Length: 240
Image (cartoon, rainbow, N blue to C red; front, side, top):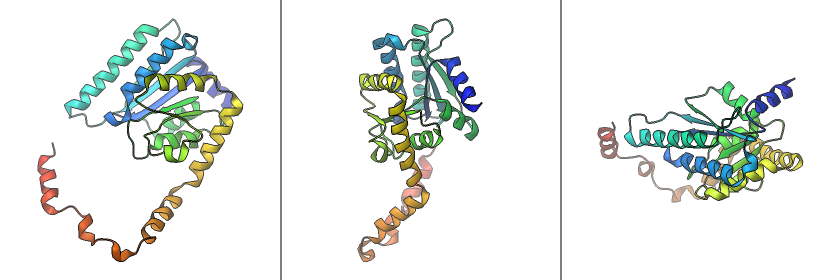
């Protein structure tokens, strides 16, 4: 019954549902991702009416003009893409500028055939891992930026891309759409195994081993790692 509901939800949009989930930030590479989606529709016309993208942008730093400009840039790109490619019964991009609670987000992760995680630079990016953890049917494909921290663990089984390479991401989208079920299952099974292994206990253990692998006498005094009061006061005075 659950599989049928997921299948019906996907068909109501298209054969392949692509998901992007990001906080509004320049580091997330959202405009580049949208340009890549546009490029895929241009260069692979057979994808018309076969793929739909859901892009969630979580509001952030709304009082900063540069972030408001980024929001306008994203919305303009989406408007242009939808204006160019929309056909009766099919809209290429569905855009949500809002936060999403955990239940709704998990449902989207499980419904998505492809996760597009393409930050220009990211310390980790938990969206990539959350998508894999939610993909219990093993039929999803992760397209991942080589500049996301998570790529150091997931690169072998994700489709790795350079987020600045618009055509490269478009090619990865096309590859994911045509990937056979056996390969998708093989890749996702391996990704989920990595995510399950590297849990919070693994991270704590890894950090502690890294600390205690050195002579503690070589570490500087604690004061060296704490910002001075002068710096803290200056930052507070500069805050909006």
